[in-house]
Length: 140
Image (cartoon, rainbow, N blue to C red; front, side, top):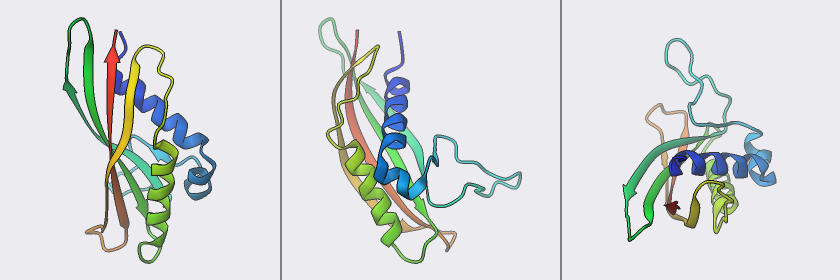
């Protein structure tokens, strides 16, 4: 049995890395653990995408194990203002919207972007967008 969140994460990362618009902005800088220096500072080259928070809620029915899954995908930029982070967030949303991921062990029922929040990071240097996606996955 494969974790629905683990399998979905692999599909998300593969889709983002294969998308030409996302790749034009971040190349292959898509992380589930953003590189940091020994002092804890982000050492990744900006801009980049981070797969952040996960929430998995059991929603079982007769003979079906179902999971409502929420995942936050962070977009980070150090360009002046919001334009680059808006472009990156839009590229991520477009790459994943209405995605029909082929999961090998589980069945994806839907995957949709529910929210996009953009703000300045407290570090005073970074612009940050957080896209929240919702999925429903059935596990055999």
